[in-house]
Length: 249
Image 1 (cartoon, rainbow, N blue to C red):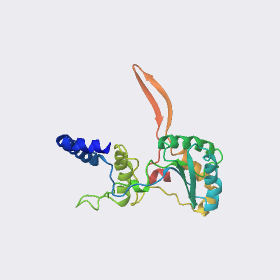
Image 2 (image 1 turned 60 degrees about the vertical axis):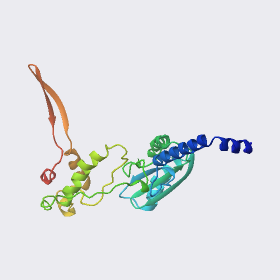
Image 3 (image 1 turned 45 degrees about the vertical axis):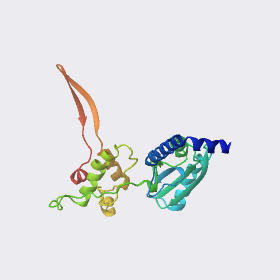
């Protein structure tokens, strides 16, 4: 057979030459279509479950949060292994699947089992959430948000972080292909109520009274409506806290 191939190649040099040129052209085109990356992402096919609980130590996080979530996810088809990390205020569970398992199917299975695990987790100590569909090597861009030259003193670090979280981040998450936008740096805007135990005791109040007062006064409520000719006037009460003066009241 090899003699016939050699004989055909010698007698039909033009056809063989054209075939080689076509093969070179096709190969060159395919090279341009390869998903080549400078740092290939070799991370396992995984789903991460993150639970933030600021008030618990590492042993309690492991016993009350990490262990129930691990037990609820041990019987998922295609599961390869589960590894976890429990520390003060944080539970991080990585559920690794076989390479042939669809990542979105795996996330759905984990979400269903988190509902079961939440029944065993005490209320108020944390709510498990799935991490975005990305890995540590999936970070593609970093940027810095700062004021233009001449306006450096107009925006504080708190205002810049607020613009990042409420404007820039929300617009970037709508871009096709962006799985998540992580914000760090700056100062997160927050209102703090510092309690003086002596003042509370003098007014015969407790910490629960302060919490209750803040919660009840930080909400909007809706009422009925008033019909007037062809128009309807809806009644609502706005009570959301927006400044320090609102909190003091």
